[in-house]
Amino acid sequence: MKIISPSFEILTPLDGKTILKHIELCGRVCYKSEDKITDTSAAAFVAGIIKRGHEAVLEHFNITIKFICDRGVSHELVRHRLASYCQESTRYCNYSKEGFGGEITVIRPAFLKVNFLIKVLKFIIAESGFELLARIEIKDKKTGRCFR
Image (cartoon, rainbow, N blue to C red; front, side, top):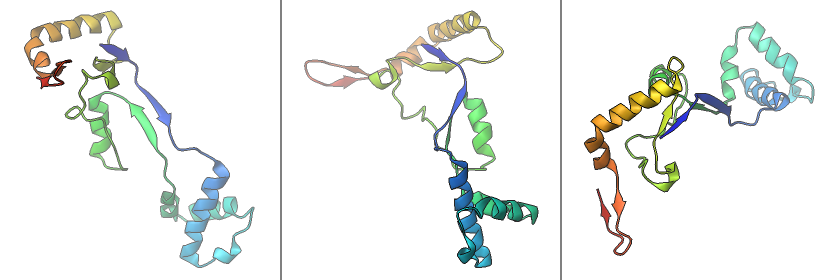
């Protein structure tokens, strides 16, 4: 069992000038003023659309963020559907395979001390050992046959 802390990582390369130019290009379509785009016009144009309350234009840029958090937090995020989400599947990921180091990963709750969490998880595993064993896949090295 591996215990990790919640975290996030911004996956989209961020460059302020490129973002502003992209938003300007999309916004100028609304006003049919693409011919007014210059090397320095983006910041003033974006400031103007914000000042006029035309914030919908800002939605033409996206960002991808990888969150590592517990299921409860992720379910609150996806529930409100403010964006598009991809989430690790607990149904299709076989945590006993090499890709996961042959172990489960648990997010450290902020309110629990690590030693207490380990004791609780060991108890849960001991009490539900049969269910966990039923999920483990064993492969016969000679025949290649898999057993569950």
